[in-house]
Image (cartoon, rainbow, N blue to C red):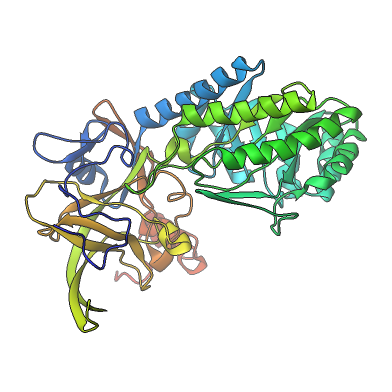
Length: 485
């Protein structure tokens, strides 16, 4: 059969609407003999029965293995050209105490960008020396706490932060290592990158200001200048953008060496993953080799030593490791009129499958037009594939979880569906829109599931309301304010 005319051009009609395409799903995801999707050896129905839906499911084995692969790939390539590579897990993708511990146990440092993220990393027992603090508007309290606990590096994002970090370091009697975030003029997004003289964005400083910023940092004995930092984008396929950015940064590095040591170069993160079968992410080993080769070649051309390298992947570690489990509530066939080949109206059916979550647990489709995939999780079906749009339950027409995919045409209320590749920027961006509690997060491995973030209850949502908390008896009992007595 051919694809529906309503389907986007990239979406092919599947031979089997039950399959789990390898690039999109976590490495332990598989159908059981009974036809259920199991992740980490735990079937979907067991997850729903124990923890409810919607439910974020994180494949611990997958997340750990991807962390090790990135760590080892860059370490191997860096050693080949006589340097080292440090990997920071970008906590903004998804951060909990448990996940922070996994990353630390796999030899990664942690990148945080707020006081809250710093608190999580510290609560996980991460050595502060292995934490980096980012942010374009770090508060005085955040800077002070970071310096006080001894974070390994703070990324300077503006001129005022040089003085703020220096003052905090002097107050606590520390020498604080810092990097300066610069804009290389390269913006990479998937396959495209655009070079411009100056970037119009809130992060970092112009590359031609690097010398002045390095001098300002070096003027403070309480600060140690480690080098430059740059982030060129997200969901990037290929190494070309990184190579071009590195070349520009290393030209600046050569100039900065005249004023003192510049031991490191941080090239950021943004490595892409597959959300659908149309995505073709670059294998990490290939990406690491190409980036390090580009750095080494440019250093040789400039006649400077290859600096220690640092990278900040998040999505490429945790994104594919996560999936969201929903229960189907309603099914609605919607007639859509499109022009036919001869211009006459053609009536087609788009099947809307509504689930018990939505934009409150995955804001990315609404924010960025992000595409996702979906599969029935509790069974397999021989029914012909039907084009579906998976919608959430919120009072927004834009509340769409999956814009277009194919499910067996007999999908019905009560079915469980899994949306894969939701490990990054879904829980992190989750909200309480329409007063929905944010879902629980469970980790699965070796046939076991364990809760790592509990589900929010109505009591949790009401507890911040002053009128509710003003009634101590009801608040203590978790009783709704309007409940009869």
